[in-house]
Length: 207
Image 1: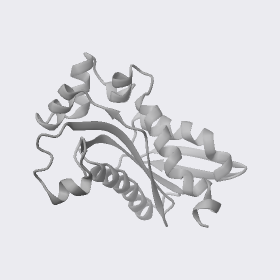
Image 2: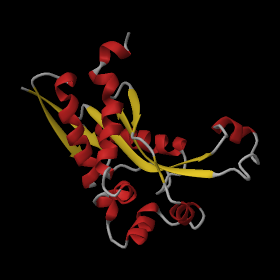
Image 3: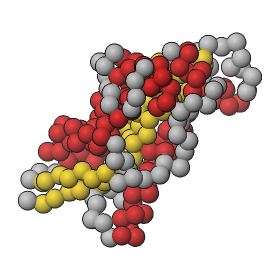
């Protein structure tokens, strides 16, 4: 039986467990008669601790995966897939597209700001890479203000709001906001399944 090793740019339990659980859904479609191994390796994202835009979330996920690829090249690690996971915020204004905001910086004034929590994944086989993301959940205004205006990292802010410690290594902000109907692990699991789709559904994506 052959073996495929998937390197994940983190050693945090929710992220590693998300990849392991995602594999249970599509591993047979990805490769038959194969043993899969998930290894966690710390990798820098190159973005802020709490990304505050979709672009930053995508860059963070991609750069974690690219850091793993570089580490494999330098150290000779036999990893077949490289997974970068990034969670953070995406900001929108009701009635405005992202393009309108970029072209007219003052348009967002007097518009209701919406701040969403999202989880992103980027998966590469060393030759090509693809993105996937979870759904979105809206942050309460007070929590969004604490992070975006007061500069408090989301992990610290959510601990304070929930009156607990170490939430990001447990249910995450997702769990707090959804009353544990969706956890951080589950959000990343969905993102990983989506990002791997071009690899396990290759016939469709290469058509």
